[in-house]
Length: 387
Image (cartoon, rainbow, N blue to C red; front, side, top):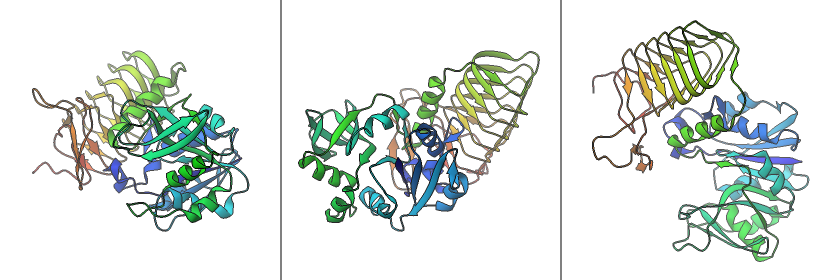
């Protein structure tokens, strides 16, 4: 069976990480979102067509033309004209019914199997607040209507971005019109099939983990590490005096030095050094080739590949990209002032409400940080400590 992964967009909502890489390559628990989804397809999908656009060469170089036993092809969406257009561009590659997923969220194997039982099917999930989603009205196992971001709730079932279609979808896509935002929407094609009584649905039985905003990288990592029920795996070296409490995965050639506390669900990649008397707490992922200085405290955070943290740094509820350098003593706090409301994230275009009262900062790839950062800060260039 074939699958299509929609991975062409820039993903500006996940700023600052979209500045350096396409969103499907953002890492969750030390693995790109794209690879998490490909892992779930093993054994049920023979060929995957990845629709690429923004920074496409990075995806092609990372994944190649084979992922384990799955054949990989690429189709370029030259203009990002919507999800309907993204599906339409793969028409010449499709043989029979096929799975479609958004490339920037995590989906489960179980739901992939359930959705592909039907010729045309959409995956839905119950949510209390549906205002930001496409919302489906269902009856007797089928979708009868689909409304994008309804002003009044018409159902509590939202579209999460996984579908199965047979090739008739391409004829439907040729006949839909652009939406108010000037795009061809896959939801308009689904609505057409629903009105014909051809659109089945399944509700999420496994998991759907959105990774659309920077703080959701943390939430997704927590979910993945929590779901990993395997016992600790220690392939590197743990010196005397290290305390381990929880599930810990330490990669090859990594060293955890004496006096360090590893407490929680921790994953440490290959070729890392964790300095003396440091603390790694909660749901924390340290990617390959990182150096963590002595006396550091890292809590519920992600440290990207090749990063270097100086001695006595503190990082809480934060995401550091690849090759980030923190000068000695840099602190990234996760709490606002007394009586503060939820943490706001400032992007170039607007301010986003994270909905979280505890949240640190987000540092893009290759940044050098020479001063402490505040909750909600986003850094895309070197911070020299002068401003």
